[in-house]
Image (cartoon, rainbow, N blue to C red):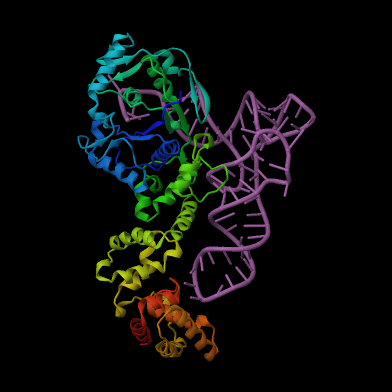
Length: 449
RNA sequence: GACCCCAUCGUCUAGUGGUUAGGACACCGCCCUUUCACGGCAGUAACCGGGGUUCGAGUCCCCGUGGGGUCGCCA
């Protein structure tokens, strides 16, 4: 009785991937993966005027970055390019034949007719009940406008089919079993249900999920930086953290666990725990999740994610030994910073020893006249440390502090600023080890001048 | 305006008639500490309002209020 799950994400290429759209895609994807079904990507590019291949690229790349793979759909942004699946094409602009055939079918049944050069659908005049997996039964009576004229346009006078029509025809043709979408589509669903009925087929099951709002509770528009998926990629969020966070907006697992890997999400996700109220987007919580995911990453995975951001920031990564880059980056993994912020935490590793830039505040605070003799003594103490390891350096510094009768911090801060130019950064002893004894000595002596 | 959806700490949420209303993020305090963090311990903080139903309502019903959505030959 229950057919295999087939769900789809059907974005319109508007030039960006909305965070709400990404969540819709995620919920559909999780539903398919959880139930061992199929996830279809379909591009709704019927509005030829504003759809471009570049706009499709943004969507495809956004989904790929998030790791949401599709079992059927385009393999590139080219409408005439390769695709996977046996229910294609997956660009609506290439499905004209199918739409015309379906339109004729409605005409033959007397359910479609021409008016003012457009083709209208003979809509039912009765209220429609929408059985919704998330919201429950919704009774949608006709609106004022619909009372006056319930029929609506299937096919525009300019020769193009409209959204409602192609959306239903595609879901029908592609065998979509569940339509999981934003609640902004609830009203539309009455039309969609009527169309399925007109075609004489069982409609898919619907599930309308609540929308995502800005932090201040207002509606998210493309103008809001947080609404655009590409921005999260640029800021350096880990995609699995974004997925994790998005999953928690409108859904929660029965056991209350919030830090969830993709595999755990797939195992636990289902529609019965999706709630009905809109959620505000909280970047702080996303960052917290990013922190958790980042610090638990295997070193190689962390490096693979981090290095591209170094390149993007202009660091000539290839001019440094691989092992050095690796060691340097691993000193900041535990910080869980956004990858974009990585540069200000690691820049000192990638500059010449005589060009370390001292932040004015750091210089004023740590490279003081009283710090000078301490730093000089530290240079000597470090000179005797072999091997030049974090543990050895720590022991040497602490021993010197005791000897001089000062707190460790009195030596630490000048040393940190001398080597990195800043008051904050990775663990001092570890960064010194990565830099190596020669460079540390040079940097400390330079700071003494 | 009409119609639809929604309403628990600042935020995301758990809760399905009887709970000291739980967790997470954020915030605050203390401890730890070489910076920033992490970590540990503790804390502040919520059922929108009003009527019902019931022995008993955060949980059910109604009204109001507030927020969101939809009312295109856009998608």
